[in-house]
Length: 198
Image (tube, rainbow, N blue to C red):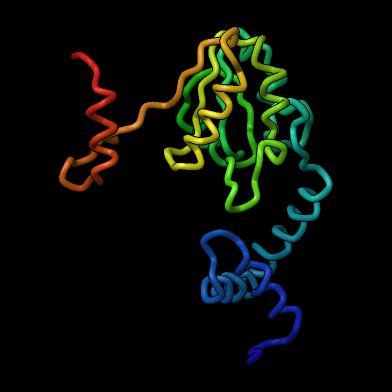
């Protein structure tokens, strides 16, 4: 049952497709945009129009930016570390950048291997990663600790072969500020296996 005109209903439907927004949240967002038409809706519409034209994928790493190569790949200081961090998605790249891990380079796979979902090696940017790998001293596989993520990490490690740079992965285990009682068994087991000397 439609409560408003087709333009408003279409806006609600489109917003409800965004991650974290269902139909109810989309309705609230649309009502807020309508109430703040001059302060929010018009500037948002203008920004979206500009983004459609300007935003592109980086031809080197797969990041999104308004230039290609992106600002990260164009930064000469980042080549000096010799480290390439491989991530599943651009959101992961941005999270690492927010964490301030330093001047490193990235490679965005565009997902993980998932035969059940029909995602194979040709659907990811693995070949481009293999072509870039020899110019780095270390490849860090920063994929999620899921079955698909670990399968992807093993596949990449196998494809890199014996003459590859050092291949590492992110540590898994107890988070900073975490309480043992609240952690699942898999996390605790991994944390114990990856223990370090004090």
